[in-house]
Amino acid sequence: MASELLGGRVILHAGDCLDVMATLPENSIDACVTDGPYLLPSIAARFGQADAAAAQGRVYQGAFAGFTGNPEIVSDICTRVETWRQVLRVLKPGGHLLAFGPASIGFSRMHCAIVDAGFEDRGLVDWIYATGFPKGKPLDKHLDRKLLGEVCDADELARGPVSHAAAFYASRDIALKPAKEPIVMARKPLVGTVAENLLAWGTGSIEIDGCRINGEGYPTNVLLDGSAVVADAFPRDDQGRTPARFFFSAKADAHDRAGSDHPTVKPLSLIQYLVRMVTTPGQVVLDPFAGSGTTGEAAWREGRHAVLVEINPKFVTAIERRMSLCLAGPEERKREAIKAKVVDQPFEAGSLFAGL
Image (cartoon, rainbow, N blue to C red; front, side, top):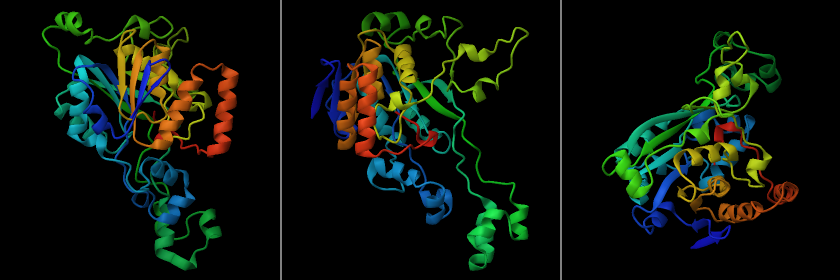
């Protein structure tokens, strides 16, 4: 089932993306910009045990359940070669794919699946942010519970390590704090030369002038979240200038969420930037994992068309609401977002699950 939104500029399909893409004509889409589900480990394995997961934030359990109803695994669909073969089939020759991947574990499997599907590997774009959540565990408390069991109560654990083993390992952990999200950049093989492909299909190039930051510099493969923490990490010259001024800055806020309680929302301005980079006005962008509908709004605002696919009926309804808000003024959009938040009781998932 498909709905025409924003005067037909956005087509929204409700259903499984593999089933929907199989119905789309070959060589009919100009680019794909998407943030699919990640194959993540179970919460119990990540946080140590169920009560530890609850103590460190029930929000993560909710984020998993928001996708499939299964709190242990989101999906392996983005690590399957057949998924990207379907994307490859519907893209025009020279059409670009920009696919967000998990910040840490599992990214290489998705990247390999995309290349194995037949895409040309065009490198990575790194989105660097300052709000990543460390996915480790408090080893001192974990060891004290293991060694002392019932002898050790919560008040003792809160004051610091109790056993010698806990004190020894108190400064250690099992994972680094994520500070970037990689985006695979790939392209469907050209037919003939770049010039021949452009003349035949209008695809195969990327926008340079429209993606310069503040009109300066050549677009890079590093994007920033706009935070001072990240910007200050770059050196400054004798005039106080930093290379960070050449990089795109964005971070998700309530405007980006547009009232959606989807656990993965990317900044609208970031997705607009990516859409602008790999398409020209009037072209069509595919997002097989539409989520909160950010790609649809980004394409509309950039003068493009979008084909969205979303499997979750709840998020299909939210996308339809979001597209209607594209035509609303800022105050009406704000009122509707607040209304949706009160009704749906969304949670803030944090940057670990920041996505489309």
